[in-house]
Amino acid sequence: MMNEQLRYYLRYHPQWYIILSRYPHEYERLIQEYKDEKNQQFINKIDQVSMLINMVEMMM
Image (cartoon, rainbow, N blue to C red; front, side, top):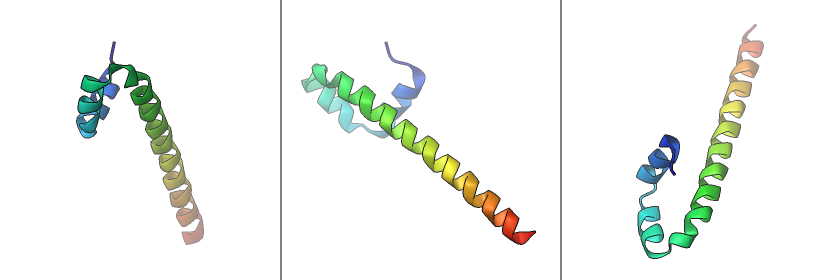
């Protein structure tokens, strides 16, 4: 069962369609890669917010 976010991930990474069609056992790797990228995006957002806060502090 796939959730919507994973479907969007597949749309932006179409190479996974080929991999999964040939090697369905790679599904766990897809899930892990999706989670890793999602986690990395979250970390990047935190970094951006931190940088914005620092800029605001410097301006004050």
